[in-house]
Structure formats: C-alpha cells, structure tokens
Image (cartoon, rainbow, N blue to C red; front, side):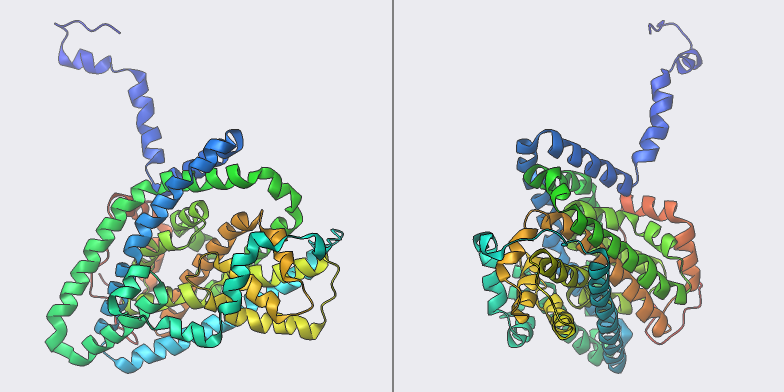
Length: 470
C-alpha cells in the first residue's frame, strides 16, 4: 500500500494493514507459557518424525534447558525450606508436618503400587508375546542393573547426609539439600529474633531466585521442543506401536490414579480435580515436554502458595515428596514387573506379588536422584523376585523414555495434591485464595509468565487458620 506524504495522521492510521489487527489476538493467544510449551511439544513430535537424525541432534536443546533449571533448583529448595521452617517458629510443628507427610506418602504410594498391579492383570499387556529370556541381551541395561545391586537401605540413608555443605549443592540432589535446609531452618527458628535479619535475607534471596526462574521459563518451549524431537527421532513412533499395549495400559493407569484416587482426595479437600489440573497446566506441559519433574519445581512451589497453601507446608512437603512420593514410578514398577512376567510366561504367586509391592515402597524412594532412576528401581525390584530374569528389562528400553513422561507428570501432580492435603490437615490453607486461583487462572498465568515473583513472605504459620484477607 502506498501512503501519501501529505496525508493527515488519522488517514494513515485508517490505512493500517489488516495483518496488524489480525496478529494482535494471535500474539495474545500464544502469550501464556503453557500455549508456547504445547506448540514446542507439537513441533518437536513432527520434527522428530520427519527428520529423525536431526531430531536426535536436538537433544542438546532439551538437555541445556534441564541443566539451566536444575542449576537453580537446589538454591530454591534450600531457601524455601529454610524460610518456611524459620517462619513457622514452632519446632514441634516442623516434626508434626514431617510425620504427617510421611504417613500420607506411604498411604498414597501403596495405593499407586496396588493399582498398577491390578490394572496390569486386568489389561494383560504382555500376554501372547511369548518372549524367551535367553534371547534377550542384558548389555543395554547392564549399567542400571549394576547400580541396583549396589543400592541398599543403609546406602539410601547414608546418601541423605552429604559429604559437605557445598557438596549437596554441587551434585544438585534434593534429599541432601532438604536435610541441610531443615537443620539450618531449625537453627534459625530456635534463635528467634536474633536471626530475624538472616531470615529476611534468605527470604529476599528466594524472591530473587523466583525472578531468575521466571526468566529461565521463557526458554521452556525450546527445551520441550528439543527433548521431544530427540525422543521421537531416537526411538521412533514405531517403538510405541511395538509395545502399544503396555504404553496404553500405563497411561490409562496413570490417568485413573490421577482422576480417581487423587481426584477423590482433592474432592475431600473441597477442590475439583479438573480445575486443579487446569491450574497446573503449564507445569504439567513442562514436565511432559522434558520428561523431568525438576524443571517445574520452582513454579510449582509458587503456584501452590498462590492457591492458599502456607509457605512452611509447601516448603517442607513438595521437596520431600520429590524423593518420597513418586506415584508415577510406583505405578511403573508394578505394571512393568507384571508385564515382564506375562511376556516371559512366568507365573507370579500372590506372595511374590506382595513382595514386589513391598519392595516397590523402598526402591521407588531409594533411586531418587539416580540417573535412569526408573530403570534402576525396576532392576532392584526384579532382583527381589528371583523367578523373573533381570535381562527381561531390556524389553522396555525402547519405550522407557515415553513412559518417563507419564511417570514424571503423575508424580508432580501427586506432590501438588500432597501439599494441599497437608495444608488442610494443618489448618494452614486459605480457601479464598484457592477459589481466586482456580477460577481466575488467566491473570495468574500471565503474571507468572511475565515475572515469577513470589507472594508476600508473610505466609500463615502452620496451625493457624487463614483469614482470607490480603
């Protein structure tokens, strides 16, 4: 379009191309982070399927984003736990919250293990495969089997205590960081007013970290694209079809667990499960895209506080749940064991299945922070039932990455629900904030996308009811 130089300004304004008007609502529509991540995932699937070799090379994008966020996860967990405990004031309340959390974790993970066992028998994903274990090559999974052999109850508890204060942060493992943070927070709580300045400094440091996370999250769509493109390019969509029954059974089981089990728990807390999942859609998509729950941890902590859970409860329950409340891993363990038994025509007695369930309670926790933790946990669980060949886990190599996405998503939802339950249990939950967050999500998403700034540090202490006032 040609503009006359002497045309009045208002006439030029009327000659604005239609593309500008049309593009504005499109930009507004793709502004929320969850939409951008969803686009990244879709493009990654298409790219990996069309250009498998280039898709494999995109792994660097996914790895870079995960490393970028994991770099700051340990400081965020440390600052969150420390400020939560310090502001709680009552040291007995810390022990009470911790005990309630562990009780809840054991009950829910046992339910996850049992559901995985039951659905695997019902859907029979390995039936008719008639696999001869002698034809399977253990070399592809030998590393996981070796790590599983080296793990014990003693090693698990010794692993919680880091070699040094700095070492816990260097390795980026959550349990040692939580251990140090709890000790540090208890010391600050015991010091009382004398430590108020230091508590304020740590709290301001946490605010700054959330700002950094907000900036990092802008790269989430790129990370999701790279991770998904690699997965599809490396293993191909054909690997999904080859073991489609197991994949379908696993995803259906995770869906049943989230909607029925966790949905019932949320219902008892007065929360609609679909509203809750919609509220966490960005964190779910980030986890789905990267096959890791850690990149979503900082945002998850912030969102749970915004929906009314007190800061002390969120700071204690969620980081601990990342190690002790892996619902997705529990479902994966029992389903995979039954699948292997069915595929190799090996009969498992009721007693052996109960041993698998009991071992799953330990192995699902003991492998937290271990590379390929799901596979290692499966190898450790299989070792407890000597009738199943360890080499049979090679059957799952091609689809484990795809199953890892469902494992991580189920676990992150489970930990979010755990924080809500413990907050309600401790009378440290604000229903007014919950209603505002769940029914006015657009504003929350936009604000978090622009700048992930935490809520006011004056979180309600455990054991004290919220007033609902700002």
